[in-house]
Image (tube, rainbow over all chains, first blue to last red):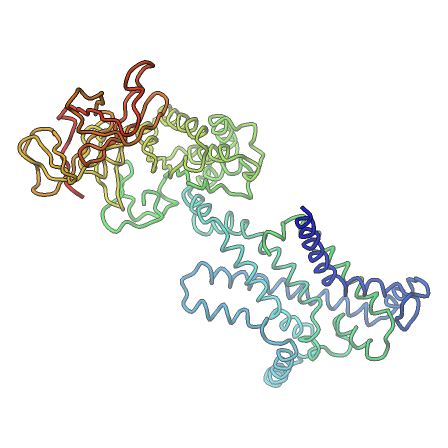
Length: 269
Length: 305
């Protein structure tokens, strides 16, 4: 009896510990953002919202935030359809070399962001020369780079939802007189929706908070929020960053909760 | 193959005289009920049923009345706005039926329609499908592994084994005169005894027993199978001196009792109406000697597999 009790306590304890470990950074950041003193130390002298006010007044952050939103939205809008198409090809068509193709599509996940960023930067410079127009430090260049980030997620998530899809529903539609294209639009695509929504959400987050890949591709006046935060960090170390990060965390969490209302994410991811 | 999802390796598929072998599924006019029901999870019950009509470009007004009619037929009109995920298995099954029937298909196809239902519901839905089929006069093709289902629902049975047709006929024909041991074993229970015919009306089982059989020259030489239905064997207390058979097991099944009997080295299943209270047969126990008899005509010689 006692042993069972102990075992259950241990079990619960280890779960709680794992959660604590995962949440610790988030909780720390959120807590610090309310501390009064500039150099972080415990216990706080007093609690304040001044860092939020400060963050709000930093133009770089506001601009970076807008840029990040733009880039993430565009990259998602482009990357998810591409990833969906790729997933369809991988799951449904008879093309050869699916394994290799799949590995290639997931590639961006395996390459360290800094490496990919450097490679892209050099590629862009070369392309600028050939095309005789700016690519680095432009919105287009940034979006194109971030599409790379969104594709692996889209392919994975949409593939998973396709693999779990009951094909007999499509056969039923055909049996009822629907031509292949109609079957796709009326049955296959709606059934893939949870996967596509999850793909869009993760793509957006990936792009929104990416730092490494972006670092070399931004220019003055066109930085993303994470890059703006990094450059702020180079000169000052006050809790303003924590305040910005907190806003970001709340935003992403809200996005996830909102999405979860429409599709159960736990069923797809 | 009939619905057009799998191309046949040979031969033709004709529906109402028309060759549809090369026609894609959407142009075939079959109404199919899938084993998994295959309802569209993102559409309401009414939208599911309306789908086929929409594809056939039936006008909105007529569509609505036909959907309501079809749902009433399967007694689901009160659930028209639910999503399939909110229905029980039996209800989903009925939606699938309504969806296939509402378009008045030339052939109604049912792929193991009852396999996902529990035993009680199965009987109910079986009667329901049979009733619908009779009322609408629909040509219906049902695939099933359940012999009871096959015997009760079908006018004509086709027994297939690994893609090959073994025998076609009414339930009675298949049961009374199966063509081979597979059919005999599939339709109802059957003792299938391996051995060789001996003389004009005998059969030497592999176990050594000599069994009486229907008279006649065997169709093949050598090894054959003797098919003997368990309910065609009578079982009695042995008269003294007799006792070639020994009881091995008794299973009481209510109205019937099943006996496993060792008949001189050959194991036979016998099914009899449970003897009334007080009958000496009621007191039989494993190990007892019994006497078995059967009408020789009931033991049919079949080719070995």
